[in-house]
Image (cartoon, rainbow, N blue to C red; front, side, top):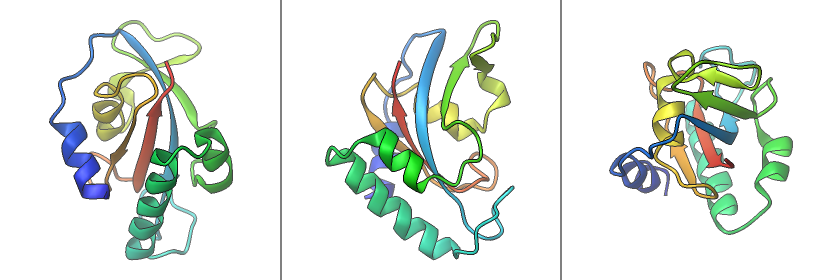
Length: 131
């Protein structure tokens, strides 16, 4: 399910918006950038697949995020291609895959950024566009 979702989202065109806001669930593994968890890469991938399935089945995304994300930040981020502001980070300042997925989602859609040492070095990001 992870790979299929990632391929499907990557095939979409980016939306034309200067700013977006996304919520995300980070599933990290031991050895990933800034990770403090002990799960293996394989365990993280299986956990990400489970959480993606639950999110796309309609479970409350914010609750899933609060209960399962390995992100130490707020979990909901604004990104912009224009001037940054107090609630919007510059897109180029985020992990590349994070913006690549976020800008290919319509509001309410969910996508996954799989682990990639260059584009998604923190682990798997399950991303829902909320604005």
